[in-house]
Length: 43
Image 1 (cartoon, rainbow, N blue to C red):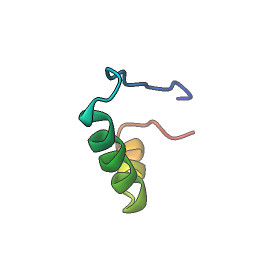
Image 2 (image 1 turned 180 degrees about the vertical axis):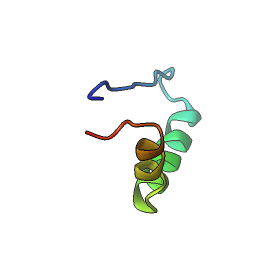
Image 3 (image 1 turned 135 degrees about the vertical axis):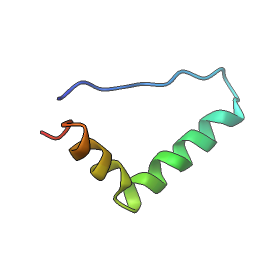
Image 4 (image 1 turned 90 degrees about the vertical axis):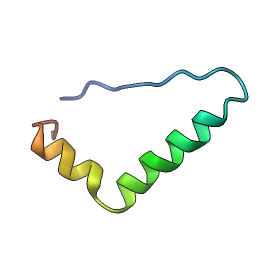
C-alpha cells in the first residue's frame, strides 16, 4: 500500500521525540520492514 500515516503532537511535545526515535530504531534494525511484509504493506 502507498498509504501514509501521520502523527500529530502539540508544539513542544516530548512524545514527538520519543516516537521519532522509536520509529528510527525500527527502521534501522529492520523491524519496520518485517512488520510491513507480515501485514502485506510492501510495495
